[in-house]
Image (cartoon, rainbow, N blue to C red; front, side):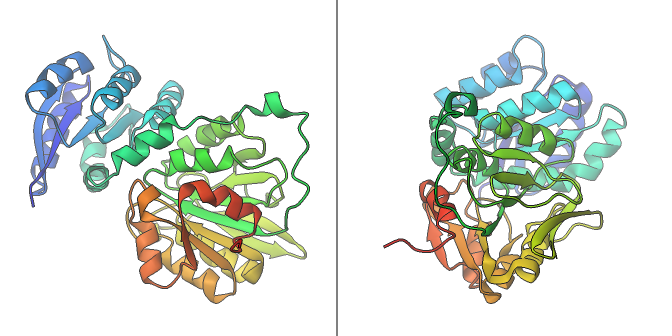
Length: 353
């Protein structure tokens, strides 16, 4: 197999030097160049275009968002964002995801060398996942028009028909764009949703806030003790596991610490297993685009408990990894393209003739 060629674009000489050395040790990855800003990167990329770009978002001369949009418009290429945990950096990184970046790796402002050594396996995995991303699908999702904002539709009547079905949804690479597509197409009255999107700590609150401004339903980062309610989508906080527990006739959220499960925290498996136990057949489980197998066993537990289960189909996935593994395990009742998932949620996952 040919090695994955990588261009590192970061204004920090430390980041460029350390990442180049670490990635060079991976036999599947070849760093073909580094650049201190996007303009230098564009010059080098014209001579040899990389398979994957590792990109900082806050740089001189041309910011990472402008560079990203230029790349996506001219020659769509998988981009892994390497961003600091600042408030401004978080907001800019979310803009990058909306513009077509595949995933995020966070970096601290202090202890950078040590962090990069510790995060090297995560970065290598992100690069390999990005190299397999369906960029045509990702660009199409980013370009899909978003329905009118909630403010423009406040007077519209809510859907007259819904169910008490609890919807549990898990996704990873490519999921931020897919979630935006789904949630912006759900009405104000819809089943309560609990969501795990693989995303670093500190980013999930900003991500939920951004979606809340686009959607008719309420979207926010989950808190311990929250009730699962119709018209509310709760996103698991980065760096914590989320479970659903039954309390009488109600479902409540539990936010837990602990080791990664299926290599992730939050883990889709943790959420879906809890939903299988607490809600049984009164739930709908959905596994969507992402690398790896997190969620496959949890979705199987939901199906075994009598719940309807759906998987995003290969053609509409950015990375057909998690749905594929769930399908192979027998966890997926039906596969659907992304465009059909909002309707499926409103129908409780049942097939419509």
